[in-house]
Image 1 (tube, one colour):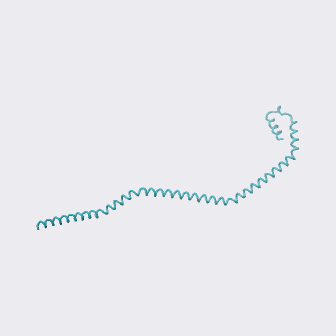
Image 2 (image 1 turned 180 degrees about the horizontal axis):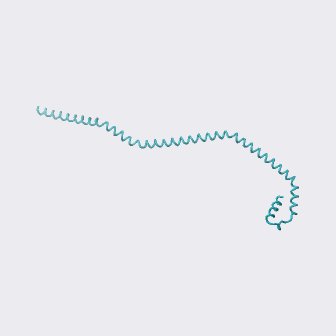
Image 3 (image 1 turned 60 degrees about the vertical axis):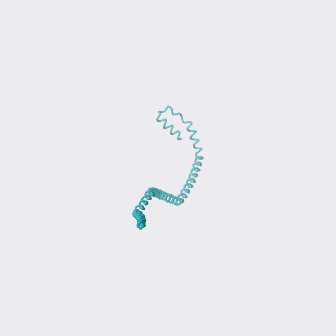
Length: 153
């Protein structure tokens, strides 16, 4: 019996040893589980945070560019609206041009009529200037004045 009790004791001792090892392992896992979870979180954050920050900076830059372009579009729309309002002014300017052209045509016509009337007088003056003697024998200053006057006549 002693052999049987000894064998039971060894068996019991092996079972107790195995149970205590399992309990010790479980206690170790339970004790270290939160730190392992925090380690995994920290590892994840270290991998994800830098690219996420780069994307955030990129999005902010794009937002600034978009705001600038929206301002440009609003400015262009207001300029186009102002141009639409300027149509009346352009119409008035066109009317002024038409009137100016008409008046210039009238002036040209009157000038042509006057030249036809004065055409006979010009021929008299031209024929008269042919008969004016040369002024080469006069001093330079006087001859220049007389020549200028003769050319005007």
